Image (cartoon, rainbow, N blue to C red):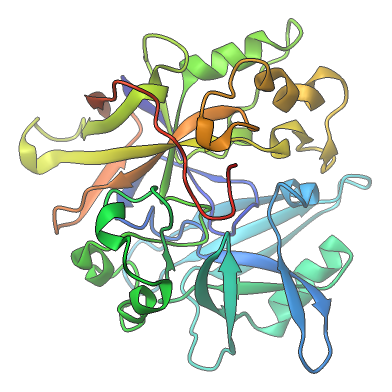
Length: 352
């Protein structure tokens, strides 16, 4: 098999940015889901917020993202966010620094899927821009040096972390700076604003099965599955249900142990209504394209830990060798471990 596509999502639940190559860390691609949009429910003395995810806010698909990285190390670069209004087709853009200065930003508590962290409220100009596009008040927050604990049985080190509390786990992370090597060296199982794992792996072969369920001439858009890594060349659709690990070798180097990236695939990805959204309108797609989730319900509810949701893709964690590693489109991928049975998803508050 080979890597055919790579994606990152600097701001959670907006459309992804395609990559040709990327550094890999135990916490995901650099800049992946470091930002999240919150809906302001009460702007009084003690405001409350709601996490905005594509499942419940389909209008988030109207925002696309593009990474613009510098040619040197003078800055971290920016993410360019483009909003296309569904009625007028008016395009507006804003540039957001990928690693903003947080020294003067207010810090708030954020809990995503029962996994707590802290985040910085971005300056007013960014919040006003997003609020005007959504049509209601929102707030952009930045993770900064913080991470979220991995819960349930998602982490390769789940047994080791079982008796640790989220608070004690988080306290070991607050002094580290992301993407400068320190977090990677710690080899901790921490995640950003990604739902439950740093990486999501899908295959083109399984995508073909989904497309076959649509009317002739219609193809399923793989970006609706929001993958990080797309693989081409697997033997059969949904072979990945049983994969426990991957070995990725760079096409730019000779095949030796130093150039291999190892990824543990721990659990299945249960799917939601976002598969039905029309990326041009920010609403449910018309016709059968708006019933993809229902179509998969018929035979893809194969995880007893998420028995009400169809499965597509596997969550992954990179094994850290303590040095910088990267992967690229075209890299060779081999299955390093095959499970004898499907895994069972466990995460507090999710699944069954």
